[in-house]
Image 1: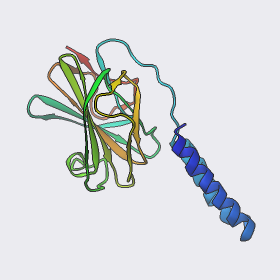
Image 2: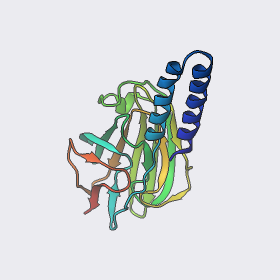
Image 3: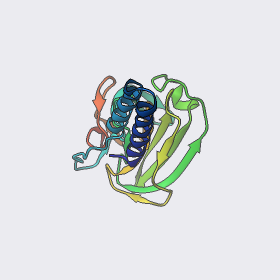
Image 4: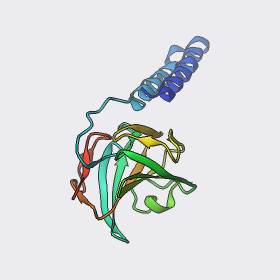
Amino acid sequence: MVRDGIYYALALIAAGVLLSFFISPWYGLPLYILAAFCLYFFRDPDRAIPDGSVVVSPADGKVVAIRKDPPETTRISIFLNIFDVHVNRSPIAGKISNVKYQRGHFLPANMERASTQNEQNTVTVEAGDTRVTFSQIAGLIARRIVFYKSAGDEVNIGERVGLIKFGSRVDVFLGPEWELAVQEGVRVSAGSSVLAKRK
C-alpha cells in the first residue's frame, strides 16, 4: 500500500464521520466509499521479476501504441486507467543518468498528443552499452507525478521508482538493440511483463 492512499482514506473517513454525526449517516456514506476506493487505488502488490536481458514494463495498463521514432527508437505507450496499479518500476537495472520534468497540458492520457503535450517526467536508465528511457505522463485526472529517485541513483530491474496519481500514461523508448516482445492491445504489469528482449 502506498502511504498516500492511507492519508487520503483517513481524511475522507474523518470527513464522513463529521457529516454523519452532525447531519445524517447517509451524508457520510459517499465519503466512506471514496475512502475504500483510495485504499484500492493505491495498492502496491509484489511482483515476480523476470531474469535475463529484458526490459520490463514500468507500469500496469494497456499498450495503446507502438511507434518508430527517429533515430532508430521504438516508443511503447501504456495507458493506465483508474483501476490499474499506478506504482511505476524501473524497466532495467542500471544507473539513472537523467531526470527531466516538463510542464504541460492534461489531455486524456489515451490520446497520441499526450506523449508530447502533457505534463511529464522523463527518466533515462543506462546499463553498459544500452539505455532505456521512460516518461511518466499525467492524464486528464492526474495532477501529480511522483518520482522517488534522482540522477546518479542505481536501480534494480523492477524496482519501485514512483507513481502517477489517478489516470495516466507511461511511454517507453527503446533503441535498436532491443527486440519487441509485446504488441498493441495487450495488457502489461509493472515489473513482471517483458516488453523487449536484448537481440
